[in-house]
Amino acid sequence: MLQSVMRAIYPAQCVSCGSMTAEEFGLCAECWRDTAFIGGLVCDACGTPLPGEEDGAPVFCDECMSVARPWARGRAVMEYGSVGRKLILALKHGDRTDLARAVGRWMARVATPLVEPDTVLVPVPLHWTRLLKRKYNQAALLAQEMARHMDRSVCPDALIRTRRTLMLDGHGRDQRFAALEGAIAPHPRRKDKIAGRSVLLIDDVMTSGATLAAATEAAHAAGARAVCILTLARVTKAS
Image (cartoon, rainbow, N blue to C red):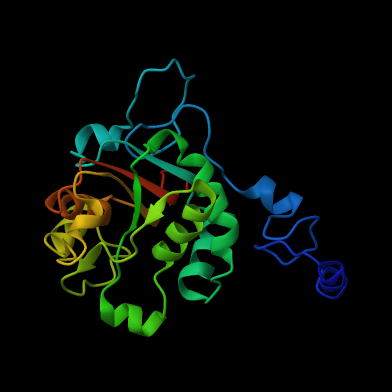
């Protein structure tokens, strides 16, 4: 009864444009159409969509064939463009923490081939100064929402940023990897949470993979048995 009253007063809205929708925490038909969800044949290391059809064998994009990836497998929900970019910027810089409820559900579905019975979800960390300014880590929000749908444990502070790095927008691949070298480490009091277990690293977007590579190396340093990565969006040539 109360829920019906609340829906009458505050009808469900599209999380992207604010138009009315049939369900809460979803997209309207137009925004759904304009969202470049990734499906079909994808790079097994980063989730980039590839031409062709699946035949069960892992395939890799040009970038992942030229850059060594320290993680085992990777996936992404959507391409970083149009609606995807709008959602991530709103979550990251617009205090739209409610978006985690919608996109975390999508991420949980895409994560299925990457999880094992002992998998723990670990978000890519923010430096404490950036966390103090933003008040939340968007990757941690995504991981916690995913855990609700997947019945998996999450350790939001398994990894830490040892130093604050510059904003990397507009930087090239080599500059990104150089800036992130040694910038992420295992939390000294959380190693027991991931030692010997499978880890699924969570972040909002993958560009070069430098941040995820640094986080993967930190997870391995803490004793993780295997590491996979999942992002809400993947920057592609098309996006």
